[in-house]
Length: 75
Image 1 (tube, rainbow, N blue to C red):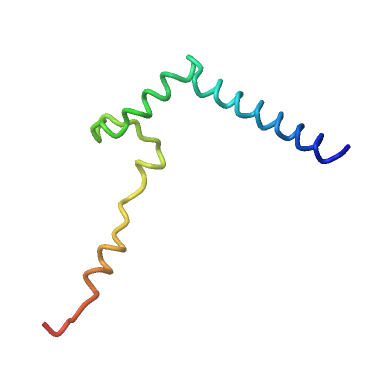
Image 2 (tube, rainbow, N blue to C red; image 1 turned 120 degrees about the vertical axis):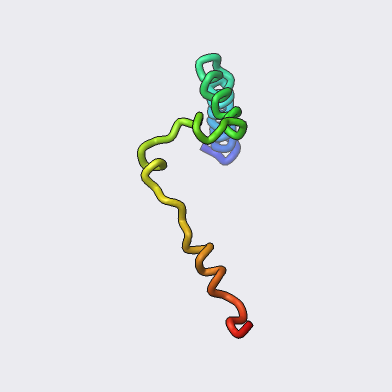
C-alpha cells in the first residue's frame, strides 16, 4: 500500500465521519433537545431543570473573601 492509497482511505473515513455527525446533528429526533438547549439562556432560574449535584452545591465564596483581604489595610 503506497502513501496515496493510505491518504485516500483516511480521506474517505473522515468524509464518512463528517456525514455521520452532520446526519446526527440535523436529525428530527435531536431537534427537541437542541431547541431546549438553545433556550436555556432565556429561562428563569426557577424554571431551569437542575440535577441533584447542582442543587447540592453551595456558591464558592473563596474568591470574594480573598478579594476583600487584598489591598492596603492601613486606610
